[in-house]
Amino acid sequence: MSPGRDLRLGVGDLLSRSGTRREVIRELTMPELEVSGSSVPAGATARLDLVVESTADPSTLAVTGTVVAPWQGTCRRCIEPIEGDLEVELHEIVARDPLDEEVWALDGEEIDLGSMVREALLLALPLAPLCSDDCRGPAPEQFPAVPAEDAPASVAGPPDDEPRLADPRWAALDELRFDD
Ligand SMILES: [Zn+2]
Image (cartoon, rainbow, N blue to C red; front, side):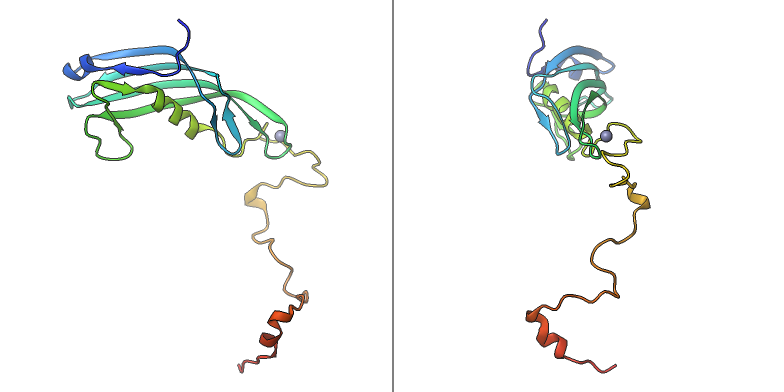
C-alpha cells in the first residue's frame, strides 16, 4: 500500500461499543511542515503506530501511540545542515462535543488523523536545533558559544562610565537640572 496524503478514520464502531480499540499502523505522506529552524520536508513519509480506542464516555475516543518522520534543519551555532528522525508521542482525545481546545472534534463518525499527525509533528520540530549538544560553532575562539545561562545578564548598551553620544534633539533635556 503506498502512503496516502490524508487519513480519515471511520470510528462509528468504536463509538458504539465501549472497550473496543483499533490499531492504525501505516505511512502517511507529509506536506512541508516548517518552523523557523527546521522542517519536515515535503513528500516525507511519516510512520504511524497508533491505537484508537473507546473510552467510558460513548462520545469520546482516545488516540495514543507514536509518529516518526524525518526532519532537517540548520545548526544554530555552526550553520551546518542537520537531519534526523522526529519521534512524537501522541496522547489525544477526540470528542463529539469538544469542551476545550486540547480536544479534537469528531467529524461525523470520522477522525481526521492526518491533521492530528501534522500538528503533532509541527509542534515537535526544534526551533533552534543543534548538530550536537557540545557544538562550539564555526570559530569557537572568535565567537565562543556561551550557553544562555552563563551569559552576562545584560550586554546591551555601553557601560555606565562611558560618555554617551550627545544627540542634538536631546540637548534641551541636558540643560534641565533637577534638584536632589
Ligand atoms: Zn553545529
